[in-house]
Length: 473
Image 1 (cartoon, helix red, strand yellow):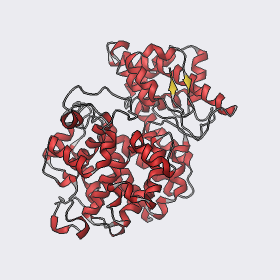
Image 2 (cartoon, one colour):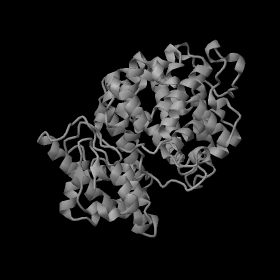
Image 3 (spheres, rainbow, N blue to C red):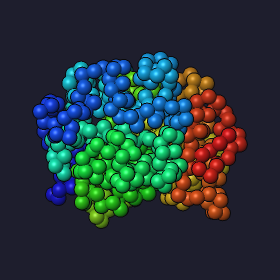
Image 4 (tube, one colour):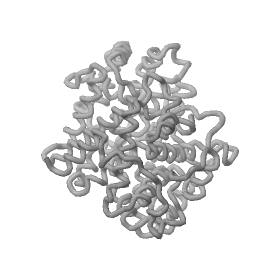
C-alpha cells in the first residue's frame, strides 16, 4: 500500500496519528510566537474572545463593514451575534469567520463540554454523533503533532487560524481596494483569494496574519489556496472539472499531508457557515454533513491512482449520494435528481421519492430542458462551476410561503427552482457561444438566492446576467 493510500484511509477512519488529549503548553511555543498565542488556546469566552479574534486578526475587520458581498443563504439572527456584541451592528460575514474559528477551537478541544456546545442546537435526528466529533478531534490533533514540514504545534494552529481568516477576504470591498493595485481583481471571491495569496508571497506585509507566519506555514497556505472547492463537490454544483485543479496539482502524489490540512480547514469553515444565524452552536456540521464530508474526501482520494480521471472521482461521489437517495446514476433523470438532492442537503430514500414526485409535475418539455442542463453526460459542461445554485434551492425549501410541510417546500424548490436554473444556464451558454461573456468568470446565483428568500415567484420572471456573472432582476 503506497503512502498516499495509507494517509487517505487513516483520515477516513479518523485515526490520524493518535488520539491523546492536546494541551496548549506555552513552553512549547517557538521564540517567534511566545508573545502571541493561538486564539483557540485562549480561555476567554463570548464577547471578550470575539474581541481577541478581531485584535489578533485585523483582516476580520475588513468583513465588519457595510460594503461586503454577503452569502445569501439562511436568515441572520436578530440578536446575539458576535458583530452585534462588538459593533452594535450586524455584519454577516464577520460573524461567519469568527464562528469558524470558534468551531476550530471546539474541535481541537475535543472535550465533553466542547462536544455539547458544538452540537447543542442541532436537531436531534441529525445531531453529530460523539464518535464523529471524536474523529474530527483526532484529525485536527493529528495535524498538530505531525511535524509536517517541521511545523510545530502552535505554528500549525496559527496556520489553521490564518487559513480560516484569509479564506473569505474576497467578499470585502476594502480588501479588493487594497489588493487591486497589485493585480487582484477576480470577481469570484475564491479566485480573488488565490490571487491574494500569490501576492502575499511577495508582499506579506499587507496582511499581518500572513506576515507573521513561518516560511513553511506560508508555503502550506500558498500551496493549498483554491486547490479544490470542496463545497462545490459536496453539493455537486458542477461536473468533473471540479476535480481538475486537484488532479493537475499532483498534490496527492507529492504532498498528501497538504490535502489533509486543506480539507480540515474546509471542515471548520463548513462548521461555522451559519455563524450569522447561531453563534452558540454549529448548525451545519451535523451527522449527515459529516458523512458527506467523508464521501467527498473518498472521491478526492480516487485521484491518488494516476490511472484514474476526474470523471472517476466525480462518479464515485455521485454514486454515494445517489445510493443515499435511492436513485440510480445509470438513469439520466436520477443523475439530475441526485445533484438536486445534494444541493438541497437531502440524505435518505424518502427524500428521493419527494424529488421524483415533484419532478414528475413539470411539463415534458421543461423536464428535458432541465436534464439537458444538469446532466453532465448530455450538456456541455461550463468551464467554471456556477456558484450559489444550492443557496437558491435551500432558500426556496426553507421559505414558509411555499408550503406548510417540509415535503411541500422541497417540492416547490424543485418546481420553482429547477426551471429557473435551467433557463439561466441556457442563457449563459448562449452568451458564451457568441463571445458575449468571459468563460473564465463563473455564473453567480447569489442574488437569486436572496430573491428566493423574500419573493420566490420573481424567479419565474425576467433576469439578466452582468459581466461579472451576477444574475440580476
